[in-house]
Length: 340
Image (cartoon, rainbow, N blue to C red; front, side, top):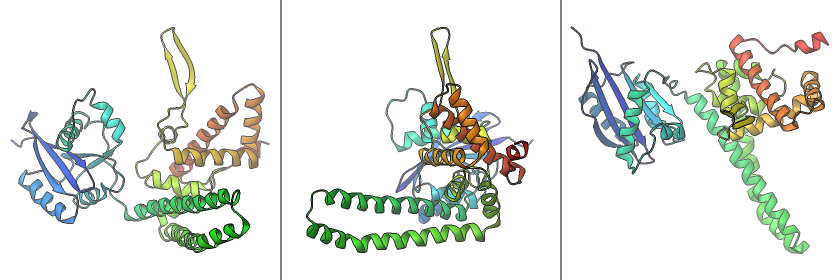
């Protein structure tokens, strides 16, 4: 009779190392947890592969790896798992930390053991993260580079503007001349990045298709469409509108308890702040240029609703429509015009 064997792996990822713990379950019987450490580089992945084979870990759906999202540091292990068909779940670090309850003391080895236990306890709820897509990864890097370049350009301009208040014209000209080459270089780099973003979209059909659908939604422009594609891995996980709204921090939640607490519905502070800011601009654009949203805004404000609350509701509507056009693979149709 064939035994039922499952493997649960927790990996604490840092810049230089990977601390890994493996728990083997054979016919519902737990073996002792095994731990080790490897370098977070190509050589470390080779050593890790040999070690996993020694532990007889199965590279299929009978195994589950859990790591925390660490930005760039977890890319190597994510790529390794993707190439070797080893299911991996990349979780929100705060969510995972809270699930541990009251935890006293920590180090990388203990963290890997806690992640391993988390994988075992929540295996039925966790959905494996989609395989690493190099194209989407490059698109994300380009968007990040664009944001940083804009921030640097803005920082220099603000600095020069502040100096202008106190400097003489002669000194100010010297300062502006000194920063001229830097500003021109940053602007050239920005142009290169923006050109590459357009190239990535045009060269890859799946991204181009979803991008084309998203920009048909009222209020959503080029940058917001690209950012949503990056956040959702081009909708590979079949995210719902409510899930995306929650991720963006625009989904309201009830705040009541018994008879003593009867607060109004409000959004949670945990959110993707960049996406939330982008949606704010999308909402303002939709109010200005689309009758459906302008009439909705005017009607709700006239009824005494808080203006920011109404704008938040419009953000929510925009995201629901964005997910709908992707799920239906049909561009947005403005039925409000037809009714009007």
